[in-house]
Image (cartoon, rainbow, N blue to C red):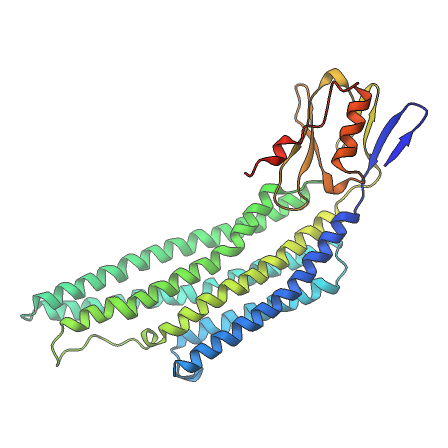
Amino acid sequence: MRFDPDDYAFTAHYDATKLIGEVKTLAKQGLMRLISVAVSVIVVVAIWSSAGRTPPTEWSAITRVAGITLAAVLVVAAVVAIIEKFAASANAGFQTVVLVVLFTTSGALLYPVTRLIGFANGYGATIQAFSDGLKHGDDSEAAEAAASLLSFLTTTHVLLLVLLVAIAVVVVAALTLLVFWLLTPRSLGWRQRNVMQIALWLPAGLLIVSSAWLVLLSRRQVPNVEKLLSEDVGIPEAPILEDWLMWLLLAGLSVTVVTLLNGAVRVATASILLSRMPEGPVLRVDPLGMVVDDDKNGPERLVWPAIDLISGRPRSALPGPELVIGRSGRSVWSVPFMYLDVMPGTIDSAVRAHTQDRRELDLSPMDKPF
C-alpha cells in the first residue's frame, strides 16, 4: 500500500504473502492427514482380525482387487502429500501434473466397481437358472423369493453401470475444465475447481454405494431366499458374499483416503493460483475515482459516477472473498482481498475520504451465512 501526498491518492498492490501462508498451511494439514490415515488403517486391521475373518489370500478375487486398488490409491496420495510439503509450490506445470495424477488415482477406484458390476451380471444369470429350476417344483414361495433376488441383482447391475459411466464422464470433464482454466489468463477457476472437487469424490462414493449393495445382498437378500428353501436345496454360492465385512471396512477407509486426496488437490490448486498471481499496482483510489488493473486492457480509469457498486463478495474456497467494483453497462471487476496488501477496512476508509462519505465499501454481503 502507498499513499501519494501530492494528489492524496491511495494505491494497493498485489501481495502474495497471505496466499503463500495458506499454501504452507494446507501442505502441513496434508501431512497431519497422513496420521489419521495410518490410524484408520490400524483400526480396519484390528476390526478385521478381531472378527476372526480369513486372511487376504483367501478372499475372493474381486475383494483382493478392491483391497490392492485402495492400497495403491493410499500410497499415491501419501507420496503426493509428502512431495507437496517440500516441492516448489508455485510451479504451475508441476502442480498440473500432480492434479492429473491425483484425478487418475481417484478414478482408479472405479475399477473394483467394474468387477462388482460383472459379478452382479454373472450371479444374476446363475440365479436366473436357479429360479427357473424352482418354478418346476412345488415350492412357489421359494420361487417368488428367488425371482425377487433376481430382480434386485438386475436392477442394481443396471444402476451401477449407469452410475459408473456417468462418473467416468464427470472425471474426464473435470480434467478438461482444468485445461480450460489453465488456458484462461488470470482466471480463478471458481466453477472449474468446484467441479473438480465433486469429481474427486464421486469414484469413492460409488465404491461406497457398491459396498453397501454387496452387504445388503449377502446379509439380507440371499439369506431371505435360503430361509424358504428345503434342506436339500441350496442357493448357488458366491465366494465374494463371505467378504462383506471387508467391503464394509474398505468403504469406511475409502472416505479417509479420498479426504487425503482432496487435501492434496487443494494444495495443488492453491499453488497454481499463487503462480498466476499478477504483480504491481492493482487498485488506486483518488479524488477522480478509481484506477483498476484490468487484465485485458491494463490500468483502467473509472470516475466516481461510472462506479455503481463497491462491495465485498463472499467466497468459501481459496483465495476467499473478493472486492467487487461495478462498472456501468459492463461486467464487474473483482479481485480477492487475499491478493491485496491492504485490509478491507483500509479500502473503505480511502473510498470514504475521497467521496466525503458519499460512497463506502459495502461488506454486508460477506455477513450472510450462505
